[in-house]
Figure 1 (tube, one colour):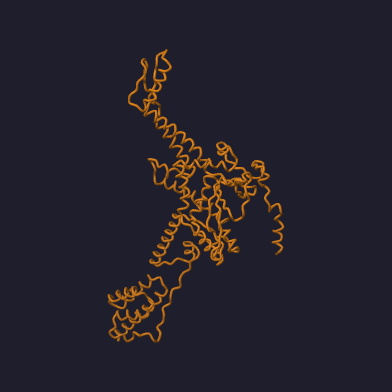
Figure 2: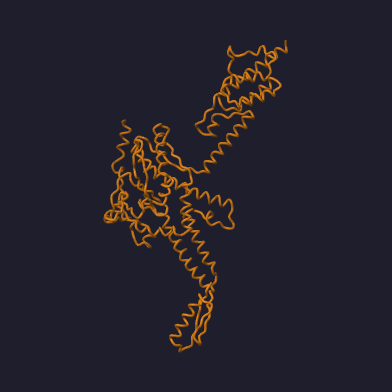
Length: 500
């Protein structure tokens, strides 16, 4: 170690290496008596009246709402619908082998379902799965996994999960390392429970449910108006009861009898705004849920004035949310499942990364590369050639220009065209086929057909030049070059004969 390294190492004092703002010293975030983290969620504290994870059962009610459930599934399915790839940490053979091993292991456990279960953290703040390990072909692998109800998990001061059991409900049981995966959402100020979208969805769902209940009462009143009976003073209590029973029967019967001297009337449901008021409330609550979960409303509440530009903007917002969900999930998997697999099997390998690229982005990138290639081709046909700097600017690093094959010289055993006699272009095709033994029959037959229609050696040379330019394989280019050389010699021979 040189002096510069020793100086830097000495500069990192013990105070810089350790956490000072620990949870135990946080006066704004008190722990339980047994040093367990409290679940801090204003909605759960107000409605669930509890600091423990058991209060999360309140958020199970959210998915009973059809609209809220569809939003949650959209958020999850937007991630699951994308294909996933495992990128090695580097081009080192060991890192590449590690990425291939991880990909094989993830495919064996239904990786998409694992991601969907972990994304339950979006609603409740965190999600946990238990890994069951096994051995296969000399490798330690994940045989299967089990999703764990959030109400069974609590966290200690080190943010480590503990399992709440029948015999230990106060501080839970300590869990082994590399066994339980925890994915968090909305993890603020070190809160190991996270803060899910449930705290934002609960109230719109609650008010929507109350509004629908009132709407149903209104519709009932509208369909069956309230019956009102009037009786004269001094009517016997028994007759009053008979009148009330008769009024109650109006909704089910077409005819009733009432005591003498009683009057019956119907109170119609008359209210300004009517049923539209309830529908406006329902639509507003749905819109609030859509904004909270998707960041937009157009994909769930398409209005009459929806426009393409607006829909594209809303879609971009959703894509950003999906990208964020993918990145957060990728971070969790890299730190847990993927790293643990390598710790057991390839500890010296660096951690690969699993990602889910945007389909639209990948397609746009491919289209852009194709358009750039078309520009290069068009400029080449016009007689221009891009510089190395231009090619790197257009296509990035990793490309190099192919070396053009040189025109081969004729070997002594190759036939001479000095004495061509009555040779025709078709004879040249036969010689070309002999040189191009590695070419496919289809390619050779196509060249032969074109040559039989040629009227001069020059035309044969043009046909071969076109084939040479369009053929991307080096072996094809080599044989085409040989054919061009033979055709050129034939033309020279023909000129010499004409001059003689």
